[in-house]
Amino acid sequence: MAGSSSNHINKICVFGGSSPGKEKEFLESANHLGQVLAERKIHLVYGGGNLGLMGGVSIAASLGGSQVLGVVPKALAQGDIIGKTIGEELQVPTMSDRLNAMFNHADAFIALPGGLGTLEEIFHISSWAQLHIHHKPIGLLNVNGFYDKLLSFLDHAVEQEFLTSSARQIIISAGTAEQLIDQLQSFIPEINPSMSRINWSTQESRKKLRLDLSLRL
View 1 (cartoon, rainbow, N blue to C red):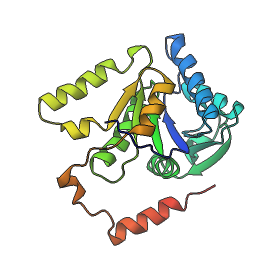
View 2: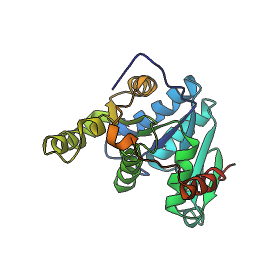
View 3: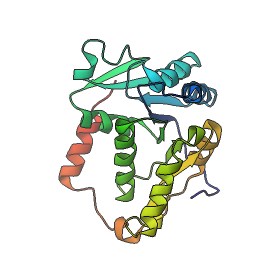
View 4: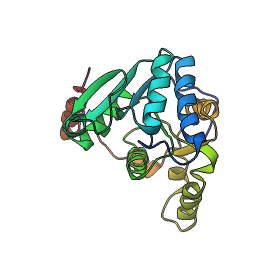
């Protein structure tokens, strides 16, 4: 939900396809997102490489003056699987470590069009928000209605009482980069009283958080 307050967003993590997709608007929107991030002096965190939409957004952001951090599992960094990472590269042991590092380095999240990896990442981060592990804003850049059916499915899940209305509000969407970033900056999470009672600050959680936060440049 939107409100009058403003989130301080210095770094945005962008998920998206390593393919340019079928329609030219997908890559154009990725390039434009990178340009808008640079114009607003927002830095980029992404999954590394230079292919597809990930290459588009990272190259545009870097050329515009944004700092770019690519987080890459060591297995993918070997050879030429994902291409050369733009900006700084942080290599991590596993895919789970990659998501943890991207989460810890970002203030908000945007998903460009993409496939299974993109969906896994955005829903993983969203499930953490549902559990009140974090309250960082999350958005879909809905290029050419790419996410229309996914958004309709989420509404259907609410209707069928598998998803609460407050959880549904976690994922916001917009058709342009400017609109989406504005919404991320004004986003106010709905607090679920039952979830807010969960204490994630156990000794093991703090130990894991310290480990995750140690993944620095």
